Length: 352
Image 1 (tube, one colour):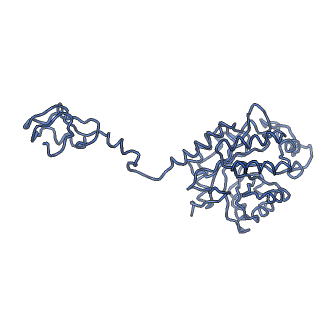
Image 2 (image 1 turned 45 degrees about the vertical axis):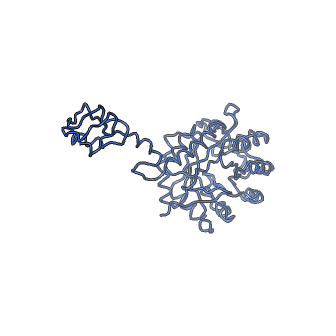
Image 3 (image 1 turned 60 degrees about the vertical axis):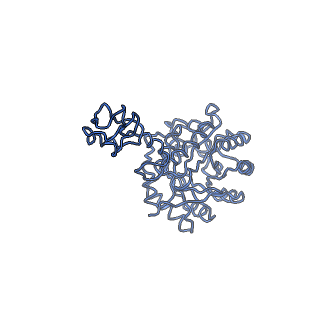
């Protein structure tokens, strides 16, 4: 299988040969304030992340206004327990008319703006804004009509896999590819809010890449940046985290969102993790030349005369390099010096 694929988003290549593509998800952290949403975009740009993502729906396009148990979040949920889906999405949605100024602000900063659409009207809006790629949210992975509609745009598709079986992912991937679109990034994801690191199962990332022949990444809802950095070490080419100006400000997603300084750390450290992967090298690197120069070797450590015996008192294994390898010490002990040798001379075969 070819797991060295890549996907192009704007001016960025997403794949194993490029630095991780860091996506900052605004979601409902705008708290109903366009000014705050624009400030989040500004903060994302300052962080060094490459992309900012939104969610394009209304309460009416994602659910219906019914207050019965199936339409309520379970009471035990730590953040949204007892709320109706309609009221939650009504609070969290990004109004249609905000999208144009948000996309414009992102582009002014050189960010890649994109979104998760939840129905055909959302796709039409995003196409009007020339969205360069799309994300399919985890819980929409089974909406094949939506997948086909997005795939037909010809834009890259980021497919999140939270709460899904591998068979769900394979079916979604077949559906997208059947429309002639093979530009897909599949994200490992644990669809709980916040997610426990213990349930992240990041070792699934290379398995997804190998099994599906796709670029892979992580949509992460755990606290902090540790899981996202670990994902890069396991082959993630895209990492997505929710972002807010301050968790103390509250909001539907604030509890599991990064603040700007944390997002900046993710941008820096994910690239370092990617750089550190390197290649399979079982030999010294060019950057170790000075350390090799300072490795131990055999040196004459006292002034000696011709004919004197080599002993542990006049020849030692010390830093730096230049003399015989320390492995030869037992071989030279007991031999005699051929000529006078000054202290600090690297021992060579011609000396004994």
